[in-house]
Length: 195
Ligand code: SF4
Ligand code: SF4
Image (cartoon, rainbow, N blue to C red):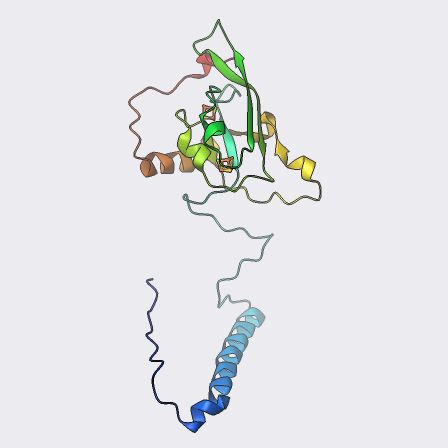
């Protein structure tokens, strides 16, 4: 629903009643009380009258455009889709990605990430790594619950970053639409990845 625009005439003449502010305060209290008792009645009767999420027991289904922490796409054989090209590392404005590439000679691909770390304490969920990746190997997930007392544990390693491709389907379809990508190139199969 589009928002309503109310133009306030600041030059309007105000009488002594308005300048007292009492009627406006009473009106504000009336509106607040009305909503309070309306919601209280709904709560007592067990009927929801307002949009309230009883977190953490209840969770909202975030829209596809939502950007949680970046994760690595995991192929069916358990390996990352990433080819360690380093573009996401280069694009990251906070330098929170660290990749150690490994080389393969007996495989359909030449490089894979031996190590892939993201320091989530520095990540600002901007999505530039996702946008830069030519392989759709790093995407923004819906995960945002990263609070911890220990800053050291905020560095996520490759194993913790891997999420099966099937669970990221909605986001992958969204970024294809969003970035207008033409996927004429057939997807790399699991047999082409390192084991
Ligand atoms: S979301 Fe932004 S800050 Fe976080 S790793 Fe990706 S590029 Fe870096
Ligand atoms: S996640 Fe994508 S951009 Fe980053 S190194 Fe891997 S293939 Fe390259």
